[in-house]
Amino acid sequence: MELEILNYRYPGHEAPAISGVGLTVAPASLTLVAGGSGSGKSTLAGIMAGYLPGRTGGQLAGSISLAGQTLKYDGGAQPYVVDLRQWVRHVAYVPQNARSYLSMVRSTVEEELAFGLENVGVPRAEMAARIQSIAGRFHLGPLLQRDPARLSGGQERLVAIAAAAVTDAGVLVLDEPLAGLDEPAAARVAATVRGLRDAGTAVVILTSVLDTRLSDAGHALLLENGQSVAEGMPAVRQGAEAAGVVVPGEPAPAWGGTSSRSPERAARGATVVPAGGGPGEPESTGGGPVLRYRNVGFSYPDPERNVRRSRLARGRRRDVSGGAERAAKRRLLDTVRFAVHAGECVALTGPNGTGKTTLLKMALGLIAPDTGSVSVAGRDTAEASVGQLAKTAGLLFQNPADQLFERSVLHEVSFGPPGSRPAPAAVRQALDACGLTGLEDEHPYELSVSRRRLVALATVLARRPALMVLDEPTVSLDGHGRKLLGRILAAATGGGAAVLLSTHDKEFAGAHCQRVVELGRQHALPHEAAAPEGISAPDGTSFR
Image 1 (tube, rainbow, N blue to C red):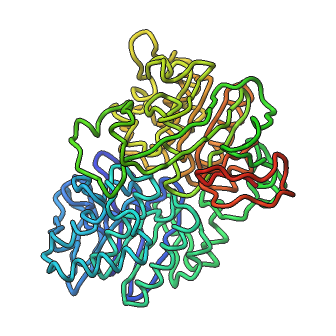
Image 2 (cartoon, helix red, strand yellow; image 1 turned 90 degrees about the horizontal axis):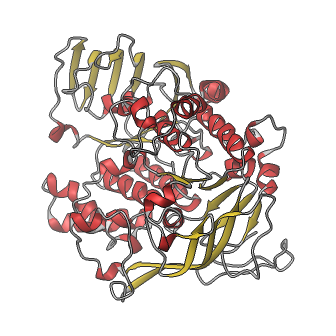
Image 3 (spheres, one colour; image 1 turned 90 degrees about the vertical axis):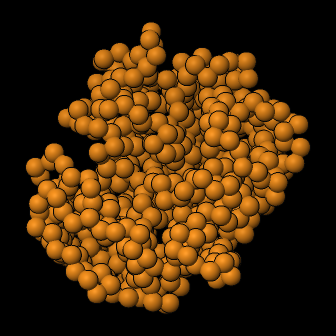
């Protein structure tokens, strides 16, 4: 594939989203395109995938060569529209929102992996062989009979990448492929990328984080304001931080301020405590408990007995099903207990699929525990409605698409039921805190994914909750966005709010959280570890 992009403009925008970018993608190559929010990465990916300009009304000037054919665009309002049915045979594309790549109409992960192969008529025997091969590469065996709607965000991304890779397209375009993945999953993606390259596939990765696993890219570009400002890995690394790209290993400001701590020291600054099985509540530097989990247990139905549920059942906001429905079940959480106090920020970490999102949703009553209890401001969530709990707690969903539905940023942040809408002053402060001033009239879905997440965060801030529950808030945020988030956390806890956030970003957690609750540890550390003594709960939860 070869691209020569003179400029691309979205409908209604005078300034080009991307201009003056040329890219040649050779077989068996790895190309890295780095950039911050709004740099043009996703626009470039959309052009490569054939979606842009399409029928969007966008205007493209330049040319694209693929599979021996060249398409030339003159910047007109009625550009050539590619046949996506043929294009996807050559280019497989997983966007930042990995869920949008999956059909979500299949009842198992195995069927999702087969979906694209069925559409191009791959023989059944070959299809089965390909699925088993890709499942082995990504260690998806335990997930093959799982309902895709029941996957964690990280598992969802892993399955989407596997579903793209199984097509054997000559070019694989991955937008933020490592976002939200735990260490083992990220390593599997990196290893699979190497394997695909060895087999002749060209891989293009677009990212706002310079992960060391991608440092062997043969070609690298740094985008800023829609233009290429550096080429080659040394030059990209040198200009990355100024362009808003996260460079792991760089010192992170602690509590929204300036810090000279190394990342290793920052990580040690956050005390890791047990989520369950310990002799008592962990110590806290904050005020009274705002959120408390007491011996919480939870199970999902056994994946071996997974059956397709109706859309209505999937759409229920509050899961209060009893033990009879879960007679055959997969234990997810067991005797989890910890508290989050006023004025402190606590990070919830652990591998993909260990129940982090489930625990967060329990704080708003969206999911009820099988055993134990969850309380917010002293009130048992089982005895309160979601609306009542929302007066105290605000939830940032892992996927902004689950949270954004209004036609403008201002309407989105101002939304609320009659009698409980946020005050105009609070809306203005939330917009300013999230760096959204001047974007009030923009449609949320016309913003970059990073800014979309900040819009969703602003909807939480505007209500000024006593408890902020944030699910993977750093995913898709560039370096500038993470600094904003750090300042927001500092201001919130400084004002007495309690914050519980889930994350795989240990550097961010170490710099901005006082405590880290870790799920899914399979072993206890030596008894010399910091008090309380090293203990492993039945669900594998432990602490350092």
